[in-house]
Image (tube, chains in turn purple, brown):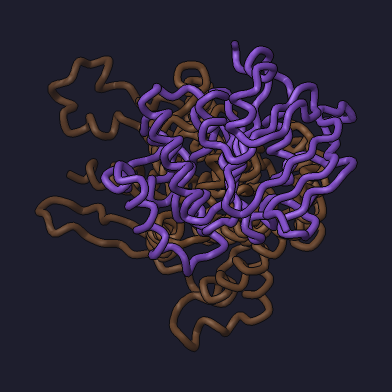
Length: 234
Length: 334
């Protein structure tokens, strides 16, 4: 049974459909990457998975259990973590408090997970008493990922984790994503840096106009000349 | 030196009294704004409601305090805080929550709170009448006259019992609030929701719980402020309504959404008021002989007359909104 399975998902904002039948499924040990042109519905799909968008047709299953249209706090309980692209930290809370909020539903986790997150993102340990709003973009992204990981999710949704980061931080974040996945967390992420993201992807989903255009392994999509020509800039 | 004692009585103590009450009120207003993003105009009447509950309970059990040795109204304060908290949560469920569910603009919430204001005032008038009533039903208001051990000082420092309780309770509330917001899981979640409601929800924080907790705290603090104000003067159904302006001025001066800013803002506005109406001529009296005649002859050297006291917070409010809309602590702009 796939960890996360979305079947024929339709949905949008205020009657306007953005998703017109998206299918994607990832296994527990996989990294799934959603790429595609602007306005293809990539972030919208991620939001639909995390209950931030009404799914009008189709279904989304987490380990076989339907989860579409559940509120986000229920999904966190069920083992899902979400890192939004923007506004993904609590700026006036310290780094440590940000991380604590990630384990809000699992207060027993805090101590153990805090030390794991600090091991994972060493820069955060030094800045743990600093307000997250004062950190650089890359460090903020670490706080955001750390916060989501504090609840020990089974699947982590990342919305453009490398947007606006310098190439150095970009590689760092991709490395961390691989490590998180190796530690047993399924990943579904939306990425603008399609080539690099597909390089670490087990599954790739190329969306266009709210539908799957290509669905294959990351390597196969990278090798496909048609995908390269239309979506990866040659 | 007598003039200095006069200054202490009329400015330092009076300023602290006004400042404490504004501070406690403004903390409630600022917390509500930071969680629900609207200016809660019914806050003054929640204060009055708290004081009214104390009046009611004290009238019912006038002897309760004598057994322990503190004024009955203070024994009743925790109960009144609980009742006001229940009222606040109830008002939210009945009026604000349905509006929030519809996703209305903040201005609609503000107008709704204005409606709640009128309703609460009407209800309180219905049961309490329109006149003033002392909360000291069976107790006597102690007035302490503390003579200063300095030669030639005849005027004592005057402080009343409710003022001492007011300062003590203000200090306790501020410290308790600080520890709640900085140490407790719920307090941190409240700050998190104030920072970023969507992310708070994505972290699994139940926003309905936080909203309810906010009302409980705001209601409890409102009851403290209303009761202590009524103890210091007398209970009147419209007493706290007229404090809305200084309380909002305090919240805005401090930076909306910052509880510590609201406390600072409360004292800034409180002292600005008392300093503005203080007759500075009194402090010049000892130097009368060396002053030019026009200054020595001047009767009242206050910046504004006492009857125009309300102008002071209004001026501060306008000045802050024009020149520094984010307040001292860089809060949100209403």
